[in-house]
Amino acid sequence: MSESPSVREHGAREALHAVRDSVRDLIDDPQTPSSVRHALEAEYADLEALWQKLDSEELHIAVFGRVSVGKSSLLNALIADDAFATGPLHGVTTQADARAWVPVGDSPVRVFDTPGIDEIDGETREQLARQVARRSDLVLFVCEADLTQLEQDALRTLSDTHRPLLLVLNKADRYTTPERHALLEALRHKASGLVRPEHVLAAAAAPRPETVLRMTESGDEEEFQRPRQPDIAELERHIIGILRREGRVLAALNAGLFASEVSDSVAARVADIRHAAARRVVRGYCLGKGLAVAVNPVPLADLAAAAALDVSLVFHLSRIYGLPVTRHEAGRLVAVISVQLAALMGAVWAVHAASAVLKTFSAGLSVTVTALAQGSVAWYATYLIGEAATRYFVNGRSWGPGGPKRAVRDVLELVDRESIMAEARRTLAQRLRGRRASSD
Image (tube, rainbow, N blue to C red; front, side, top):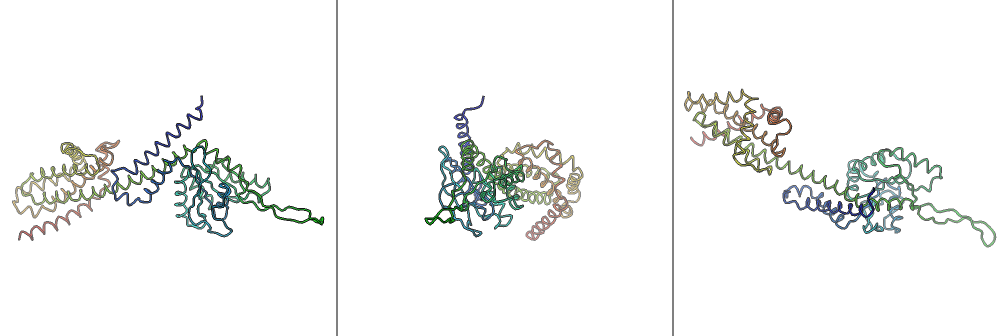
C-alpha cells in the first residue's frame, strides 16, 4: 500500500527539520577552532543562509546557461514581471540575482538568475555551478539550440552535484513543430545520463512578434506586428509539480549534501591543525629524549627515563586528538608499539643497548664518543612511537584492520630514516655544543 500524500508530506517536513537542526549544530559546534571558522568564513556564511532557508521552508530555483539564451527573460516570464535585466548584448547579468515567485503549498519560492557561463573561465565556471547548486533545490539549464561542448561540460558539472536538473530549450518559437521535436530528441540524447528525458522541455519566454494582415478602411491589406505572450505553461506546470511533490525532500537532500561538504572541510581543517600540533609535540619529545639519553652517564637508567618520556608523549597526543587516555593506558600503548618496533627493528635497539653498555667501560669519555649515536637512536625511536600513536588516535583509538603490527610496519615504510637521523644528529650536536660552552 502506498503512503498517502499527508503522510509523505509529514515525513518530508520531519526530514527538513532534522537537516535544519543538524546544520544549526554544525554552525554552533563549540569544538570547531576559531582558526577553522575564519578559514572557512564563506562556507559558514553559506551555512547560515542555508539554515535560514530551511527554517522558513523556502524553495530555490536557479537558471544556468550561456549568455543570451534568455535566462533572464525566462525568469521574467515565470514571475510575470520584468524584474531581471535583459538585453541583446553579452553580460547583462553580472552576478546572481533573486526574486520571489508564487508559493508552492505553504513554501515560499525564490528564483535566481546567474551570469552567462561563456564569459568566465573554466575554474570560475565550475565554482559558479557549485555555488548555484548549493543554494538551489532545482536548476534550470537553459539553451537555445543543440548543446555546444561548453554547455555539455557545464551540464555535467551540475549533474555531478546531484541536484535535480531541467534542460530547457528556450526560444522554441524559432523552430517549426517538426524541427522542435527533432531538436528536443537530440537534446535528450546528448543529456542522457545527466538529465531525465521527461525533464527536457521547450519554452518561448519572449517569442518574436506575430506578423498579422488586416484590412484598412480603404480595403487595402497591411501588415502589422502583434506581440505574443510567453509560452511557458508546460514548463511552469512541470516545475510546480516537482516542487509540490518533492520540494521539501529536495530541500532537505540538497541542504544535507552541502552541510556534509562543509562538515568534511571542517574535519579536514581540524585534522590539519591537530596534525601540525602533533608534529610539534613529537619533535619536542624527540629532542628532549635524545638529549636526556645522550648526556645521562648512568647506563640503563637513561632507558627508564626515555620510556617515561614516551608515555608522556602518548598522553599528550591523546589530548590533542580529543581522545584522552590515562597515563597507565598510555604506558600500555607505548608497550604495544615498542614490542612491534623491537620485532621489526631489532638492530636499532641493539645499537641503543650497546651504546648504554659502553658507558660502563669508558666512564665520562663515552658520553662524548657515544652521545650523538645513542641520542639519535633515541630520537628516532620516539619519532616512530609518536607516528604510530598518532595513527592510532587518528583512527579513533583503533589500530585498524591490520592491527598494531601492520600499523607500525606502515609507519616504518613511510618514515625517511636517513632524514630523521640526520636531523637528530644535527640538532643534538648543536645542543651538546651549547651545553659544553655554557659549562665552560
